Image (cartoon, rainbow, N blue to C red; front, side):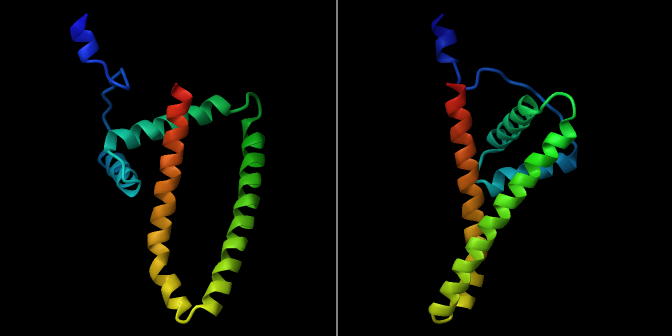
Length: 129
């Protein structure tokens, strides 16, 4: 009994999966981009896939997915327009603003990806409780 308690892990099941070289490389890139361990990245992708599957409507899934994608596309476009307006305003106000914006672009994109991954991971952990 004490041995079982000592070996207890947060995620209690192991699954061994074989990947093609290409898929494994993609998994490594995904994990690295998010600053995650490889196993954490794989677990996150599996959880995302299962969540999408669970939410998939029965029947004509294609139409429902198209509506969801359209709504996401419209909200994404609205966000991008707002961001672009803010960036243009700042570029016009700050000396050398255009050069600064170009230099910070990759850093900001990476930080945004890491923030989204952390958010998804926190939501998944909260849902597991």
